[in-house]
Image (tube, rainbow, N blue to C red):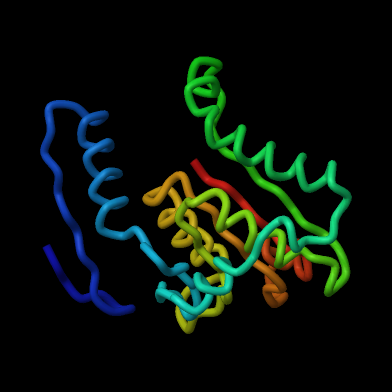
Length: 186
């Protein structure tokens, strides 16, 4: 079903199933298959998603071997993210939400971006990059909802936000200005 609203078009799809669980699984499977970025990273800017093959190619040249960190720190980062991606059953058995976040903090040039690129390459999960939350009609908080809705549709995935501008209202992105954020959403 499609109709126009004050901010453009809107589209609604209906799924009929024997239970809500079956419907939700079906929707997630369809979303993963039709919205997966493939050999690209999805970039969110101006309230919409675009595929960037150039950004994806930049991640493919990154490796942990080229990263200058203490060897035990490299191993800790790699092992932690890999163990998390293999732990969904354990989280479910314990009744804990299967989500992970990491903040990489440091001055420019200390390897945050290279570390994220190496993780993207090694983890082989869909990647989302939040470049801007600015929009003519919507608030940054509403834009975050769009980002996380897309992330949930691609789970597991990795999303990245860096140096987002400070807005007039207090929001998550203003609190983390200048901090590179990497989240693995399941």
